[in-house]
Length: 293
Image 1 (cartoon, rainbow, N blue to C red):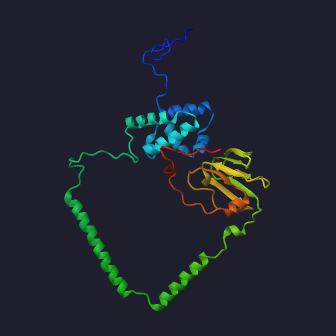
Image 2: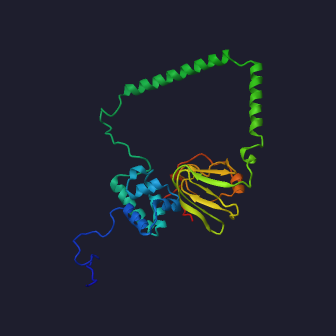
Image 3: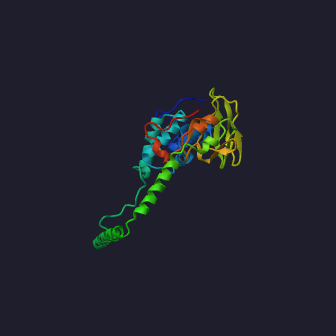
């Protein structure tokens, strides 16, 4: 059989105008992932992109993603892990988003005709609302001025309030804390409240534990492990105890963590985890998320 191709690169005998490529960027990424035998959970861990966003990209459900900039950034991170041409895929994805009407960084709003009287509120309604708001504001300031003049606290009450505030400040500055009561040589136990993939390894990258932990399942970190570290995409569903006593969570929200030491001494020395933030805000179009071990 001849290996010759037509001038446009189409194999002989192929139907005219046939396309020999995937129709969407998401399908290309999914095919590359499946060809490498990787699960979506593993890709999420390597890219530090939430799995729900990667799944939405594979299924081209762009309405579930935060916006064009972040969507392209997530896709480029995915492509780099799959060793694909991330620049080409990013350009293809921009065209795909434009054709679908997904532009900007916020959800699209219904387009109304400015001259449509059914859509534009009457002018008198706007003026009435403004007058009502102004009347309420004036009434509040009048009431507040009377309240302050008639209900001023007595010197005794002021003294009691000051003493209470001083007591709170003393309590806050006390060096005692819950972690000081925990034995730094206690046994470190990691358990899951939901199904979650995690990997634990030592400083020589020796794998100590790697699997999808099921709810209620637990793992005891070996006491002789050298600098044991953890990587996972959902740290908020993990509970950690030292000697049976809980310690602050390893992370918050669907924000991946990596190279975080989980020895007793390292866990007790950690600072409190800040409140959860929007994960996608940490991923840019140009850089994407860094891959982990």
